[in-house]
Length: 112
Image (cartoon, rainbow, N blue to C red; front, side, top):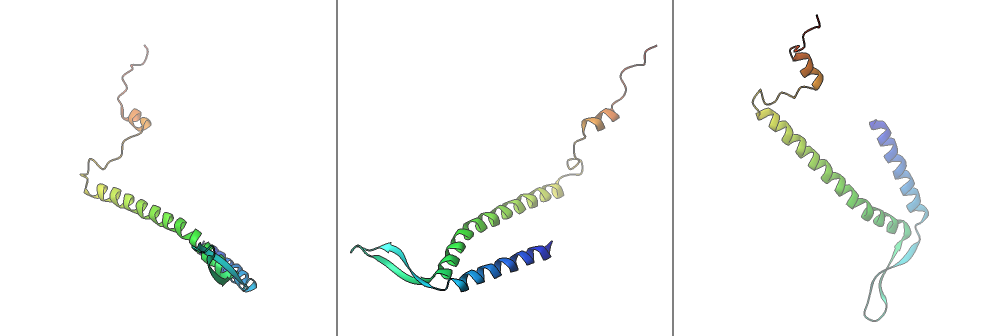
């Protein structure tokens, strides 16, 4: 599975590098309106602009993913610590209805 993930990242990197290399033409990018009616303008290559905005879109989702993983690992760690510190009787899982029925004494007498 790790090999597939690595191949995927290599393919994505090749596509991104090819896109940036093909689109290395500078374009004006307006950032902020100024008081005299013009804009704060930078001239950057298209590939660089695409890369920056891709990363700006990717970063929040990556942070949400990392926060979810952190929260899940904390929950698992908390549950594991609870099981470690619980007395032996409290750590036993509940029986299912079929297990309880199998242990129950037979209260019905056979018909005679």
